[in-house]
Length: 312
Image (cartoon, helix red, strand yellow):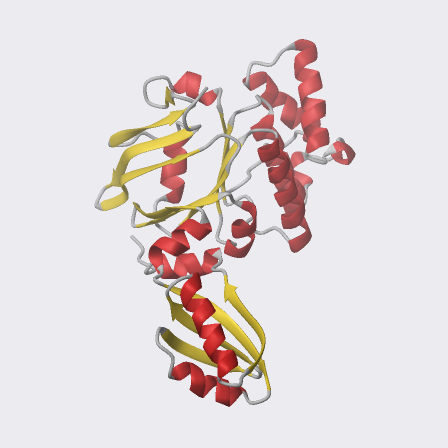
């Protein structure tokens, strides 16, 4: 199919006095990993639950592969794999039994069900845990089992709510590698997380919301260009960094200069032409420039620039 894999259209949801989601719209492409970012209480989980057919909006709709989650929820569920923010495995089931239970629930039968359970368990690295009770896994392995359950019916869209919460660094790295493999195989992934540096490395694009409304959306580079008239620049010199500091303070378009040893970081208004002209003037002024580089914004910078920390 052509068009976006996921399309959220004018979504609104109120709980009593709280407007959890307020006229929210965004879209994501097939095979893309989109980060869903916002402060606590921004409406991320509510939006994800509506997209996963687990809640109903007051207004608006969500389309998955062109299928409305309101008009055709059963059809939409075939295209969706939802991973909630907490994993609560059923007691008295080992790992294969847990996966087999959900494979049956998804309508898989006979040899196809057995093959699917084995292949999904292998992909998620659960081969060595066949005799483990589902309730006896570590946090990291539990999240792998949670993901495996989500993949059994081969959904086109994965909706992952805080999947890396509570994982140790190695488990987060391994989990991130699994998600990259899934995206490379063509699955779209909408993922929320408060671990912004890792999310920034993983995602093709981000959607930032606050108080239920979209603040910005796009790639990190696109958002940075849209929200900041200035670029951050790092300068390193040989010799007197204070002389470089005094020089920068006299230059047009330069602001907020910070000195750290022989390194200086400052804001510069204008694009590449302004940066090139400033570098020429620095060299002409006798500064021994070793490094002059634009500092790309990361997702934490974007988050701080575009949100105010408002909660509902």
